Length: 96
Image 1: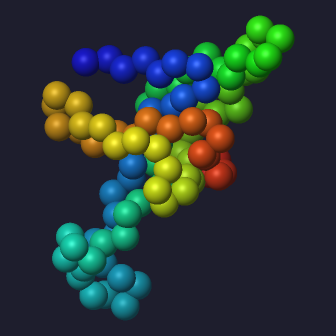
Image 2: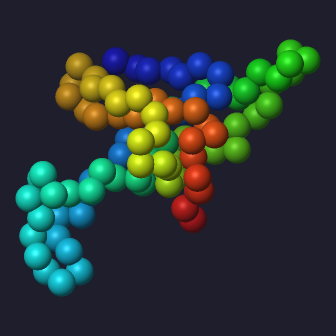
């Protein structure tokens, strides 16, 4: 299934949460923090402005981004893949 986001929305695949702490303690699934980092797998065309023009997206497919802890809507594809759909405004930073 191919998802194509509309307007200024992006689809993000969250990166896996850390399995172990810096001190070497292995964390169970219930204690893991919700990831706030992911890779953009699809992006819309951009935000439609009041005058009808389209403002291009600042992020692109393949970028690794940081986003707010509770940003976006979680979805699961038919293949069982966990993804997030969010607005470009929910992105806090692009990691280089």
